[in-house]
Length: 98
Image 1 (spheres, rainbow, N blue to C red):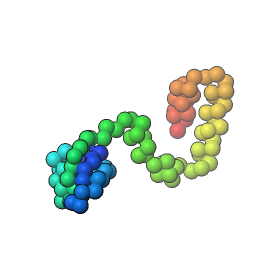
Image 2: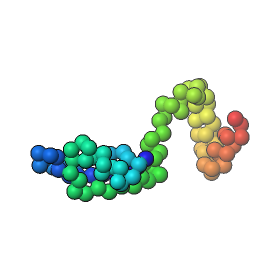
Image 3: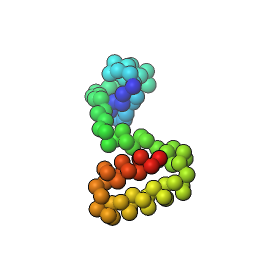
């Protein structure tokens, strides 16, 4: 499914705009028409990797890892980075410990 930005007019002539989730451009237009919207413009929302990262729930991740483990890992990472070890190497070392 993709997100589409749209603007149009209601049956009463009032301007309206929003976003709709649909499988195709045609499907989006049909959904809006069934809601009584006459579409004037519609474009597919392009998502960037940064926007996709927002979809990842931090609570969902943290729920699987104990707070104590996160604290220990953070302290170890701080020590390694503080010792001028590159971040990638520090993360690799922590990964190998698990």
